[in-house]
Image (cartoon, rainbow, N blue to C red):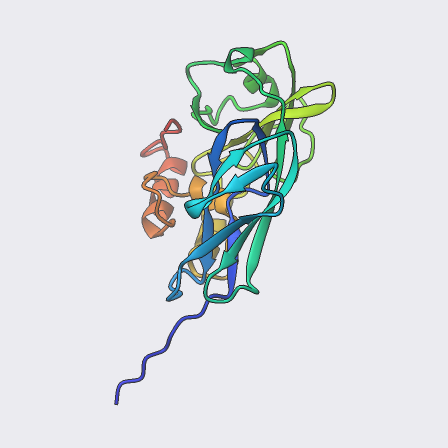
Length: 239
């Protein structure tokens, strides 16, 4: 007798909690089904106000006019299981209004390539040229001061008259807890995630995918972080 056990969807995680876009821009959010071995991995996306923005299959968002809307990720298997994030559509900000140093890798609204030994707010601000206001917050949305370290999940907010025009999210590969360092603490956080004791949010899963292959972090990534800590193989931050 063969007994087949079907894994059911228990939750959904989105890789963004809030997004700032300009009119006419497109951006993609990624939803992840929990558990990862659930049989039905299909996610349906919806916008609560399609006049502000629409969202299509695979989470591709198109910003249509200034305003706010909620974006929903819904399990096809069980529509009662959902996740959501807030979308703010703001005035069009031209790319020429901000310039990042070539040492940084800017991929849409994500920034990597930060030197883990020179990653204070003051260090990062020196690599940004703009006439607009810059505010940097950590993954808890707490404002960071000049001497504070910038880590995974931190956000660079570009503001005008107190309003956020654009928000970039930072990835520091190997930093699993957002403190801007790569230490044995990160090994513990990643290990607990792999063992399914304490799952990490999406941005931290991305930061601990050291091979940058888009897959979930594994014991291989754990080894690579350990080698970085021991000075045997430094983690490359760009890309």
